[in-house]
Amino acid sequence: MKHVIVIGAGIIGTTTALALAGAGCRVTVIDSRSEAGLETSFANGGLLAANSALPWSSPGTPLQLLKWLGREDAPLLLRPRAIPGLGMWGLRFLANCRASKYQRTAAALTAFGQHSLAIMERLLGEQRIEAKIRHGGLLELIRGKDAERHAEDFARMLERMGAKVTRLDGAQTAALEPTLAPIANSIGTGLLLESDAWGDARAFSVAAAAAAQRQGVTFRWNADVLGIDVRAGAVRGVRLHDDYLSADSVVVCAGALSPAVVAPLGVRLPMAPVKGYSLTLAASDLDFMPARPIVDDFEHIGVTPLGDTLRVAGTVEFDGFDKTLRPARVDNLRRALSRLFPRMTLPDNVRPWCGLRPMAADGLPLVSATRVPQLFVNTGHGALGWTLACGSAELVTSMVTGQTDGRGSPFSLTRSFW
Image 1 (cartoon, rainbow, N blue to C red):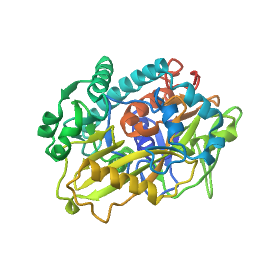
Image 2 (cartoon, rainbow, N blue to C red):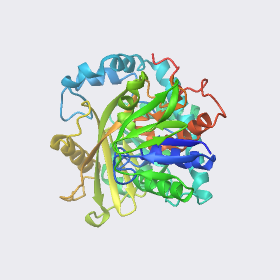
Image 3 (tube, rainbow, N blue to C red):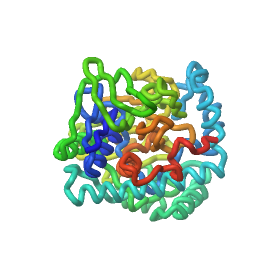
């Protein structure tokens, strides 16, 4: 039985381990933390945005970066000290902001997101994973100047990519989601993306790990990877601080740390860490709860009901690998939430969190073989790891097991990043 080592036990690593086990591989997962999903998957936005899986490299992004350079109140913040570290990645990112590339990337991500969500639904239907995914659609609010025109352009783009979109005026939006009644007059158009879903990525990571263990996967917790052993031109194993594990293949699912894991082997991943923030509010501290996720393009935040909590996510921050939880950025989310729901009483305990999203330069994930035989990567998903996890796991498994070499995939490392 082929032994595959998976490095990383977030939403990407756990679903990859489960897919590999289902394909008949013997699997060992290595993670430096004590449980699954304690890094980027821990408190993300919770959206399974399969019908609006869009890259951050949009045509308007370069101007926004300049306009908001160094501003703590900006939803998209580029810290000047981070600019030198972005280097070639930054140039590639800007090159991918042109309209034609943005459209192609969005189409590829949305198609893959829809495929990935279908795989997730199948796993849940077969009861291979015991987790809860909620349905009912994502509500996107378009507000501000020329809102109706912008909403129509956006809706048509999504429909061309296969999304089901219902257009609502302000009154209809508030009727569908009564918590928005106080700001109904400011809503130019509400777009209901009927096929999208939502859930807790951390809980799903834990459930996927449990499902993988039931299929014989071994998890090595609190284990630091010192290096991947390559001999005679191919992967042979992984060196830990106090152990050595032989392997036939290795799949790196280490999020923003993935480039550092493979760099000693001469493998370069065009990725950068991008910090995102969230708040988690207890339902018992609120006098309201939306029925579905709401994404407010005007405030640049998303709110997602997750059972007994409300998750509030937003802000994009280029700050290298600095994971400092900055009060000013947390306050931005608090103020945006208060403007979205002006009648709410904001509780004192908002449980702030930040994490590093692993962002590839062109917005597409890196699900690929590498130049080192039997070394694979499954990383670089940016803010879409939760949405693309199950599809990515299936794809990398097909490569590890030799069903495909993945060279024609838009997620291969051999693609152009310009």
